[in-house]
Length: 122
Image (tube, rainbow, N blue to C red; front, side, top):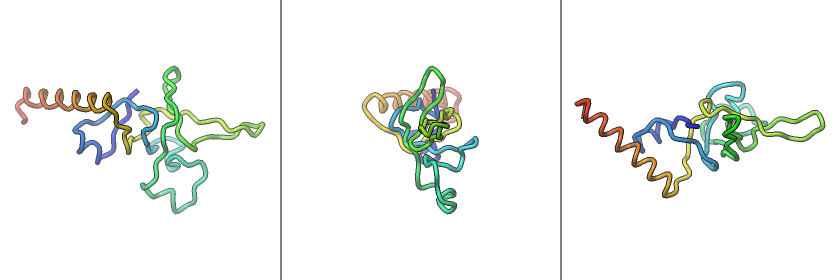
């Protein structure tokens, strides 16, 4: 389950998408939760700022959705349940990096450079 990276991360790491993981920060770019950016009730001026993002609390691989911090709805009995958001509707704004994730980034970047070299563009 991969999600696209924002422009800064694309330029920094040289890749366009990476598998989404718990503790990544994402911003919702499509769908009914587009302006929410990881908050369930936000004021009108905060809706348009790109400074805040929601943290991924869980990745539900069976349903192919991610749950994002503070994106939830209330059931009729008052209980709050997280809303599932498809990874393609999110943009990763901050990566949680560890040695495994860094090796993935290096491997994908090296493969992309080889592909460009073979095509004669680099």
